[in-house]
Length: 348
Image 1 (cartoon, helix red, strand yellow):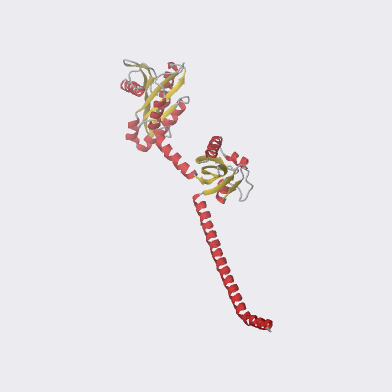
Image 2: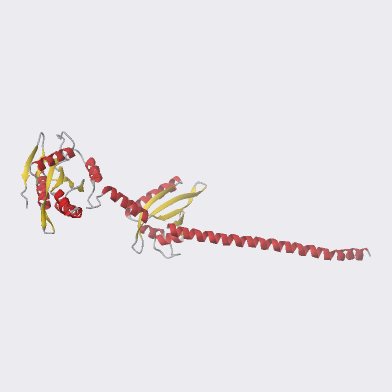
């Protein structure tokens, strides 16, 4: 009887247990559904963030890369593939990819990478690459070495396309160092080159500075206008470069003033011969609307010599002044204590 009574009591409780079990299951199912919903939301958010990252990377031309150590296996984002003109998911062989780097960039990359791994640090490098499709690009590489304990296990970072930045920098540098009208080095570059030269010749070579000033150029500007004057200066630059092919530097240092630096001539006579050639080359007529005007050149020459009492530029300028006051269309060589004329060229 006791058994049946206990059984009956349990039977009476079964509906309550069933209801509690069902409620617990429903609660678990709701919790699982909510968790799945949150996971789905995170997945959507992650996909959206990845999409934004990919678009931002594409817009900024930035890619992320990773290289495992020591096997050198690579992982790239799509933008890095684009930078190297390679199809997505192409097999990445580091030894082949390194062939894209210019010789100078590759040497610097190897040096900085090895040092970063050794020091457990990082580096930044602007490198030149030529892609398999033949496109030349400049990229900025940033890298950080990751360690487990004290053992480097991977190196990772970003690769940024800096071609536009490089072009802008080159343009700024060009504007700072070259004359826009003629394309010749400007006065700033001339002064830098002059400062780097020794004050006297080394060994058996002869070094000299030639300063050239056009004769009759003001009349071209005043009579034919500034456009004709600009064309005259451009032609002068072309003629001067052709006449001074062996010179170290041919520069425009002022309005109608030019300078030539030579360091490898075998004698002073070779330099004076060059001065004669310059005068002959720049001696010409300019015609506009039936009118003709003559353009010539005066040249002052100074040799790099320890006996010079003043700056080489001052000496050449003194010789140039003497050439112009003595009749123009000629050259003078600076000599202490006075500038002595060497030659006069007849006008064409």
